[in-house]
Amino acid sequence: MSEDAGTLIVGAGVAGSALAMHLAELGDRDVLVVDPDLAGSRSSSELNAGGVRATWWQRVNIELCARTIENFRAHADELGFRPLGYLWLYGPDLWPGAREHVALQNALGQDVELLSPADVGARWPQIDVLDGIAGATFSPRDGLVSPNAVREHYRARARAAGARFVNRRLLVGVERAGAAVRAARLREMPSEHAALDALVGEVPDGREEVVRCGRIVNAAGPWAAPVAETLGYTVPCRAVRRQLSVVACRDVDLSRYGMIVDTTGCYFHHEGGELILAGYSPPDDPAGYRFDYDGRGFFEAEIWPRLAARISAMDRLEHVRGWAGLYELSQDNSALVGPVEDLENAWEIHSFSGRGIMQSDAAARALAELMRLGRFETADASALAGSRFRTGALLPEELHI
Ligand SMILES: Cc1cc2nc3c(=O)[nH]c(=O)nc-3n(C[C@H](O)[C@H](O)[C@H](O)COP(=O)(O)OP(=O)(O)OC[C@H]3O[C@@H](n4cnc5c(N)ncnc54)[C@H](O)[C@@H]3O)c2cc1C
Image (cartoon, rainbow, N blue to C red; front, side, top):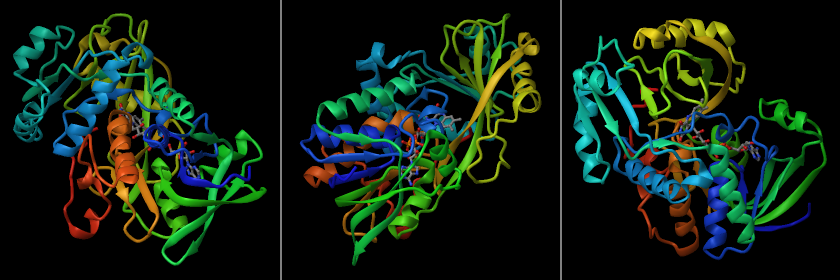
């Protein structure tokens, strides 16, 4: 590869792919996206739970999720979008805050219902243990999507509008002229195996090429911090392992429901047939590039007790498989979308903090507008600029899960 690029996007997950799509569709005919592993075996876009909701606490997060979900609804068959809603059970600690933010969510068109524990028992009869539930919300516009289909949709449209995606390329350095990045050093990955090793810090030797670029975008998800360092700036972001288990459950049919989030933070949804996908994030999981799944031990210690304590028929579950991926957490649990303050021609779209699929389309569209037109047109995402960590205008989100 010896192509130069008007816009070089580093990372081809949902964020990089959606940005390429919107830039190209807004007329940027010279977009190049590079990634060591376009298949995304370690990318968060491949390893997530597929839930999409707009029940956040910050206006910008609600708006960007709502717009993205509307786009999923418009392409529901292609993207595997199932508008089955989100049922969220709250304990007494979080319930007052959750209840307070429903007004904002509904002012932004979300139709979120406030439920009592008795309502939950009546409408979700499978949930037969109501202990510890102070209240609940049900957001009917939310649902589940196929993240892989979403990413491929973005890539197909990006390619159709002229964007190029190049596999087996890892950004390892840049050439700068003052505060501008003039070129990127990309190392060719000799194999898929080598590419996956590179993503846990074992970067292989290999041929390097220098690609001149007019501007460069950090869309490296959980690798945003090392990519920022390569470009010459810092971000307050970290990668943290999140594990998901798939279990067989013959006695409880959840196929009519979307995501259910328990008071404990354990979340689960129907995964086809008699399978259920369930996740839980132990609060003490350290930051780092860890993809090891703790297997049956994790399921038995963290998932099973929480599920069986809420749905008594789930005392009979069979562990099938599971995996681990990375959450890309910023300091306030909101994404960084906008210009890089310390560099003249660098931009960023990353650290969605567990919100990357559900925010991808609208966030990328907003950034593409800013880059191409110099202003936001469809949604004002200015609050997500990384400069907020300097000014103090933070956007804290309670993640709960
Ligand atoms: C277990 C789990 C459950 C989740 N559940 C949900 C959910 O239900 N709903 C939701 O919306 N979100 C969820 N998320 C979060 C969501 O998956 C992410 O926010 C989203 O996928 C981030 O997309 P991205 O494109 O920013 O990052 P990624 O998909 O990780 O893509 C980053 C890309 O950058 C590439 N890259 C890294 N370093 C370099 C380099 N030096 N040079 C070139 N390329 C590089 C990587 O190879 C990778 O392909 C979940 C995440 C996990 C882990």
